[in-house]
Amino acid sequence: MISDTAVRQHLQSGGLIEHEGEMSPAYKQELIRILTVSGDTELVSAPAYWHAARNAPSTNAMVSALAIIQDELSHAHIAYHLLEDLGVDKEWLIYERRPIQFKYPYAFDVPLESWYELVTANALYDQAGYVLLGDIYHHTSYAPWKRALAKVDKEESFHLRHGQNWMRRIAQTAEGREQLQKCVDWQFYLTVEWFGLPDSMKIHSGQLDYRLKGYTNDQLRQNWMRVVVPFLESIGVKVKAHHDKTSDTFVLDYHLPVEFDEAGKRWLFDQPITWDDVMVRWRRRGPANEQHIGNVQRGFKQLSALGLNGKH
Ligand SMILES: [Fe+2]
Ligand SMILES: [Fe+2]
Image (tube, rainbow, N blue to C red; front, side):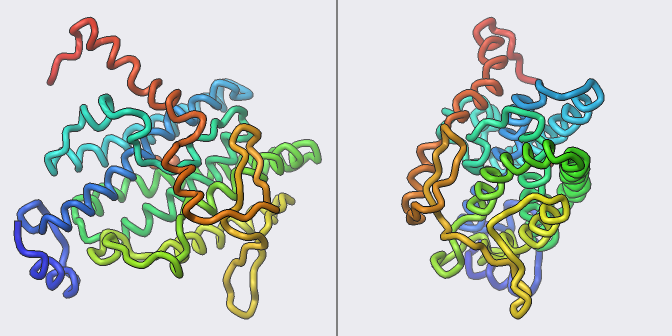
């Protein structure tokens, strides 16, 4: 390990970090934090997508959903493997943490139940993943992660195109459009919230200081809206956001954040809340947290009970 001043100087001159010997303790801590969020997000998307994929409308559709789920598991493996290289116990990360300790976005805690909701998630959530990981891929100072993300980037773009293609097909009928509108009415606003506190409230970001990522929350939210809002408009689905010509930005037409009824999957747009309230909901986790993590951990725990989890 080296001093934090030396790390900061190295990063300021555009340098990359290859291994632990080039990190300061604070750099390593931020890296572990962001890699854990990334690994947990990829991991939880597998049981979340599987829950809805069981209702696929055809065998072909089921196979395409399973291919996406398999990609997500391999993305999770990439992040956890990088964490293992930093001395974090992978078995503990995946199988021994309690569901509430996982660090993925709250959006995945609201269960996806139909094929409509699954393809909407591919178009909105995977697009968010693509924006977030694309930023890391292009800007991160941690070279091993940057290299690994080349493959992830391509696969995420397949996932979001899968979502867009299905939504375009479904939106061809009035009934299909109505179904998608119902999904977007809750899933769009969950994704808006996913990007977190506005820059005006976020005082300090270690992840930006260490160039682990390059864009701020508002920039990332904007990059996501820039794709998603015109796409939804193009298929006749409405959202509370519009393009402002003067500033060439996308602007939300409601107060962010607002109260969310998680059991009814409904936003209460007339009930503004604070970001502190959002944090409380995020930390409490949502309805599907225990089920999703339980599905990931169950097989391992059963095999452990039988003494069959040999280390390789
Ligand atoms: Fe992924
Ligand atoms: Fe994905």
